[in-house]
Amino acid sequence: MTAPPQRTAPPPSLSYELYPPRSAASADTLLRTIEELEPTRPDHVSVTYSGDEARRAGSLALLDHLIARTTLRPLAHLTCVGSTRAELEDTVAALVRRGVRGVLALRGDLPEDPGTDRGELRYAGELVELVRDVERRHSAALAAGRLAVGVAAYPTRHPESPSFRHDVEVLLAKQRSGADFAITQVYFRPQRYERLVAAARAAGVTIPIVPGIMPVTDPRRLQTLCRLAGLAPHPGLAAALEDASGPAERHRAGVAFAARLARAALDAGAPGLHLYTFNEHRAALDLLERVDLPRVPHEPVPLDDLLLPA
Ligand code: FAD
Image (cartoon, rainbow, N blue to C red):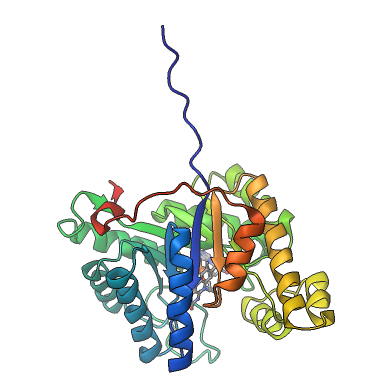
């Protein structure tokens, strides 16, 4: 009798986050970044979505570029705050028509002025349901496949949430709404990711929870990021960036810090890494070298193969 074949664990996934450029100069940097990151064969490249009509058009243009001119698979971020249900349905349908097969469903940050219209959907979970609904209506365009739908997860309590426990319940609710995977907000202590995964698994969350890792190599950027995400800066990282003698040392310190987080997450069983890049390739590539992420060489994937099995 021959032994049944052993199932080997898939290699860790790799993804990057990009955002639409704000100027001609930053567009050039972004194109170079895409060129430099493409040979690392990420599983997907996510494109942020926020701001006014022009910024959103920039996100769509970047998605088009990735689809038409690269071998990279895009994951389109989509936020529901401030939009009507009909607008969101149109946007999802337009993404599908463009060839996008993955969506990161987010609420988006609330407008500072409480009088501003917050839109028809209250939470990201409702957007996941809406995406699944549009997917059903476009089943012909999607052949037998499904869209890959991701959501945000929080190793450190979301600023509006009453507790970390509540965040875990919200993640479970997003899974029940139809999410396939989660990507975490930035965090600075390995235990935060491990605690989230342990609490989520205990609550019944089974979807992959991919750690979001950001190599921060500039002290001002650290402050801005923490203000926007409602996080306290890590004192050790802040001091290392402040005390560094120049850009090269800041770069080394920021990459080394992020690489330790990434390695700890992988050692704790993380299914992969999602790197927040700031549209710059150097820190991301240096981090990957330090982490020594095993990558299975594969041929560029044609778009039709991007569909997940139904
Ligand atoms: P939700 O899951 O809706 O949570 C928002 C708040 O509501 C939380 O406090 C939660 O506890 C609470 N809540 C949720 N559901 C329920 C419920 N059913 N009952 C009671 N309370 C509930 N922002 C952008 O504008 N553009 C981007 O491209 C973008 N990309 C991101 C990528 C990642 C990986 C992450 C982690 C964040 C990103 N953000 C982006 C930021 C995100 O929009 C904010 O963190 C936002 O404040 C919350 O979004 P969410 O999808 O987690 O919302």
